[in-house]
Image 1 (cartoon, rainbow, N blue to C red):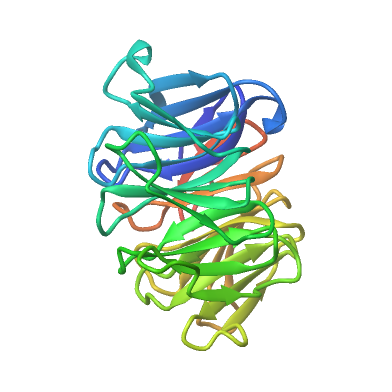
Image 2 (tube, rainbow, N blue to C red; image 1 turned 120 degrees about the horizontal axis):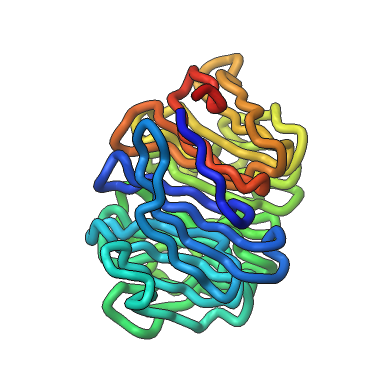
Length: 314
């Protein structure tokens, strides 16, 4: 399958929920420490072509597609801002909105796939913010974490419920109708970099940590994890549940690999891909094409491939 070379280091990759051949990529210069960023919108085919690119003054750490407008992308920027891009408009007309409330880097964004009108931002200022596309200010700020919040993820079935993963070693479950978090999972003894909900069981959540493990939890009984998945050699940067199979997950790590897991079977590690030559920091699974994966990393490459095939194969 095709490969795309980015000028900067890859940070995040997301398949379009509307078009099976569109992919958005977030990148940052100089490994995200200092410098510019760029949002790429790629067209997938026999070769990968760039449909659009939007430059930013600071690195782009994450992005997500709107669930209600097929051309809108929300980007999390290193200066703490969120920028909304319309990929159908030229660069000069973008971003169509810039939202700047976070006091530190914005590290994660997630669009609500149930209500389709709102999104979350997770920041190194220890907070999560709730936004709607049509409002210039955030709807609410969630302050409980004691350290950086790296990721926030909406529950796929309940429009008001989300989870947040933090460097304070907890994952918190929130309901936007409640004043504070509704559950605190002391999930790992080291920083938690990512979390995601099972798309077929709204009580199952996975957490990924600097401790090299992924843990699967049932929020109805969270004293002990359902399973602990070991196999990565360094910190696990992202974890993502499959949109097609309930027990399937993808992960990527600073060990430069992308792994596929089936947490319901004894030998849970069912695939390992070592195509990246630097930290693998972004991974996604297509909602529209079963088994289609994408990854990006600090080697400035974006790979798209079908599970079971070699990502490097032409």
